[in-house]
Image (cartoon, rainbow over all chains, first blue to last red; front, side):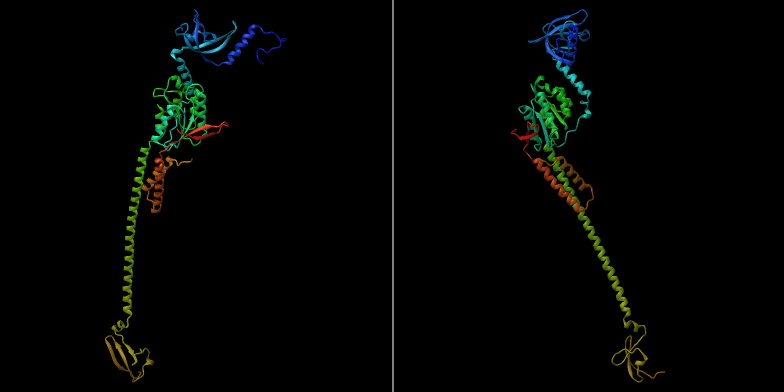
Length: 381
Length: 73
């Protein structure tokens, strides 16, 4: 039920009830906000509290800044353009909308940027997103790169030119996003979220060319920095020039000072790699010829051993043959005759081995070692 | 779409060269490694010789799916 929906018959509210409930609603409806406007009707009370009105062309709001918040600050001059960090509330006693101001920075000091940056930086730090241990190494030879930048910006051409020169074998997926002005934050958030849905991507570059602080500001948005931290592959940031460091740079895995430097960091130089490959090719050829030489040497050694083996085999054979020949020689009948034996043969030459083969009075021959002798068998004893 | 990973090619090539240089391989194995090394050198050199950069533009369709289109960039 909303505050003012009451039927006429209900109990009427007291004024303080209305303003109190209005205050509760207003305070609950706003977290602390930054408001920009011009100071008018400034008054510093003796209590130390400051009262003033913040206005622009269309509206105004009463403001109070307590002594505890304004201590040590110079009082702003009438008409100064300022940023205030404030909690909107309702001043119950007067029934007025009022901003309770905590911080007040003249816009020409551009302090708001700094403050907002510091607040966002502190939040990122608290969540561990600035921890150097979070930083992932870049792949040595990425084959697919996601590039989040403006399709019309100078950064795109700079990056592509370096990639063409150093490592054209890479595939570039351009995820276009506005990088400044209205809608840039939403487009960057969407583009960064896309990267995780492209499985072939191994590395991402996010960035833009140089510009004013306002131009680069979207890269200081806390949500953009958090989206960079959520990208599942290593991210190289390249925002503006050397001296511009944004929250996106702090969260990225590698901060490049310029878009060209980002491309240099993303890919190796193919001339250096070609040299490395040539060295490997030479080592490969050398290793094989060395291996072949070892093989040849081993083959030679094997042949030597084979020859030795065959020769000794043959020699063994020859030796055995000689021994066999000697044995054969020993078995020859002539050798037996040399030892004093004789062979008896009848006139036809048949060897007479038994007594029965001799006929008394019949001639036979005796062969002894150096010739034959004619003989005649006598009577048996 | 699927390109040989240059890193893998190079790492394998280095492993092959080291094996041929250091290990006492039998000749068949050494020759097989050498042939593989030559093939990988060829792939690596082809990749290095590639001169045309591929740039595609990622487009999100109304149904939320992502597509890529060629570009003249």
